[in-house]
Amino acid sequence: MRNRIADALKGYGARPYIEVRVEESYTTQLIYRGEKLEVVDKSRSLGGSVRALVDGSWGFVSFSNLEGLKRNVSLAVEEAQMVGGESFEMILSNPVVDKAIAKGGGASIVPLEAKKKILDEYNDIVLSSPRIQSSNIVYRDASSKVVFANSVGSYIEQDKPDLALRIVAIARENGEIQQSGLSMGSRGESSAIEGLQDEVKEVARRARALLDAPEVVGGEYDVILDPVLAGVFVHEAFGHLSESDFVYQNEQLRKIMVLGRRFGGEALNIVDDATIPNLRGSYKYDDEGTPSSRNYLIRNGILTGRLHSRETASRMGEHPTGNARALNYLFSPIVRMSNTFFENGDMSFDNMVADVKEGIYVKDWYGGTTSLEMFTFSGAEAYAIRDGQVEELLRGPVLTGNVFVTLGNIDAIGNDLDMNQGGGCGKWGQSPLPVSNGSPHIRIRRCVVGGK
Image 1 (cartoon, rainbow, N blue to C red):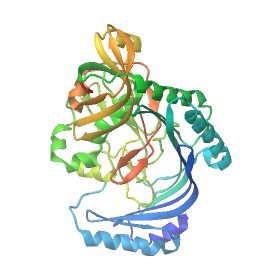
Image 2: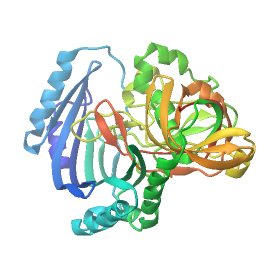
Image 3: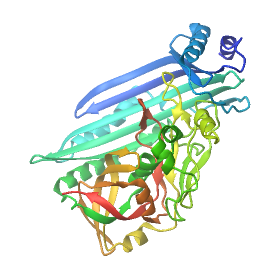
Image 4: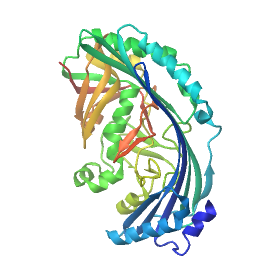
């Protein structure tokens, strides 16, 4: 492969700048809806892409046949020459030659029948539970090997295993419908989905309990978020605003996201780190061949960094952070998060609750939307807090507000950081990209909660 790519790049030198990615993937997917197993799929794909930079403009060509690689390189260069754009000096590092190979075969070597047996049991647990009308289970694992090479001499082979599972129980009674879910994931290790019988029973129990729970009364509350919902908040509401392609292209956002600006108290630290072992968003090199790194986005309450590709770093006079990622060979790399989280503080959950006279404890999430600094998130479940005690279950909490005001209103950060590896991230048609997010429990003063 290395010789084939080197031959395709002959005659171009370092200018124009050219990247080649070749990817081979093996994927398994199973989807259940109620009693029906709707999808059983095992597939293999092999393809690649060429990206060329000429005078500030990119050309991009994807392909499924390696025989025409030299011609595809030429097409990408020609495409870039035709576009025309604002020229910039691309930040390029010294050539890297390396292999980042995953240990073991992971879920890819587990027979399909064994995976189906596990999921059949979980589906039976959900559907046999009282008041449960239906279920929804989505399982996917992938084993990918990606080769990256560029015109300055880098050649990197990297394994990218991934696994994700989502289980939803849907309860119904007297025209009322409620649901509860469980999301799991791993860097391809099948053990992540084994032995979840008790967790699946709890999902069904929670869905049933929500049928009887009163709806949250809308108002302004002191709110405590669990690590799952707080992790989603930091990813969706703040993490995307730290992706520099958004910042560079949006004048309003550039005026807000000024390095050195204070957004919270001294205990507030937000990190994106692709170097942490064994998380779904981890990797050794991004899809531009840049080494991954640990990046403080907010440190001691101050905006200190953002996420970059080589291009955004070059255009903004900053440094690449190793956050250029592509869903697969059909897409160009764009700026994406990896593992994004609030760092630990020093307060226990019990002490956090004890200091709340009237508030709400919100756990997990159903969905949400963001628009620049404004956010709305639906919590999966909630509990009333009165005089320092967590009390009855509530349903229907919807949190809304301005992310920067909300960050400033965080007055307590727990010591129980937990990373959520379920789900995936979507941006510009590239979804679901493997990421993880997390947080300890956090407390937000004066948070607007919608309800009845």
